[in-house]
Amino acid sequence: MEESYEMLIIGAGPAGLTAGLYGSRSNLKTVIIEKGLVGGELLNTEAIEDYTGFEHIKGVELAELMERHARKFGVEINTYEEVKSVRRADGMFEVKTVNELSGEENLYRAITVIATAGGTPSKLGVVGEDEFAGRGVSYCAVCDGAFFNGQVITVVGGGDAAVEEANYLTRFGSRVYVVHRRDEFRAQKILQDQLSQNPKAEMIWNSAVEEIKGNGEVDRVVLRDMKTDEVREHPTQGVFIFIGFKPNTYFLDDHPAHDEGGHLITNERMETSVPGLFAAGDIRSQMVRQITNAVGDATVAALAAEKYITHLKHVQSESGA
Ligand code: NAP
Image (cartoon, rainbow, N blue to C red; front, top):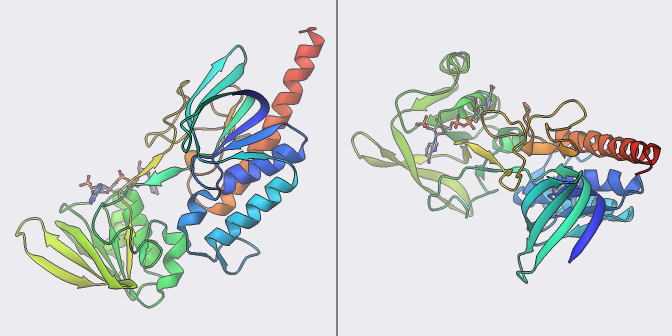
């Protein structure tokens, strides 16, 4: 199959669905390609309490509402279809995909592409991590910290994210332990100083989480001391894992400018260094990774893409192309 679009969006999380809403509402021929189900990270989030206007909503319900809203304006959404490559050729993008169910390969052409494919928090890969995801195990302090008010929280990691988020989590937890596999953090000194001065925080050095246990919800983790090999159980209700985050940019052949962590660098119009390629949400280099700013990015990206297309058409009609 080969199809042409004015706007092609990669990923159907909050950013992708918002870009799809604005693209189709602007009467652009718009398609969203999603490798799994519609919703993105929303589907891994049990409850959301920080999306303005929704005091409490299940992630899956918000995904359904966002999808319905985007579809109202006519956006096409192709699920279970993974983007394999995005390449600029003759002023258009060629996007190759594979249908995850049928194995069929497809080629899309598009004037603009908005990358909203998010990223993947690195996992520990220990027993209990998947089982208790959303039931004690979290990868987002701002999203889930408030669920652990007055409880014992354990943070895993030693980079900027772990140390910064451990500090933040002390406003909720009765005590916040930071488990790190070495005896020093790699985080910035200023973040480390804030944490060491925080009376609610305590470091557990040279230790690895070997298993996450509980009964329906997390109630303890198994820790191994890397120096003595001693194994013990550590009671905790929350386990926040910050051991890195990998943005999903592997399909971009044109190598747009990115930061140290691989996130795409954009200007204020969400344009990347590749003309016609925009980025929004977690894939983009920025300070926070929240639903609110993902939909904000996507709004800007879609409206800027619409202006880019209008300008391109104007230039082409002037030149008689
Ligand atoms: P990171 O800097 O890559 O740090 C990952 C941490 O997790 C390291 O301490 C690492 O230990 C540990 N780790 C990795 N794999 C592990 C495993 N399997 N088991 C246990 N521990 C493991 O990642 P990040 O903290 O997410 O930061 C990513 C990027 O965003 C960085 O460039 C960071 O500077 C930036 N960032 C900046 C800010 C800020 O400026 N305020 C805030 C957040 C993030 P080792 O140290 O032993 O390798």
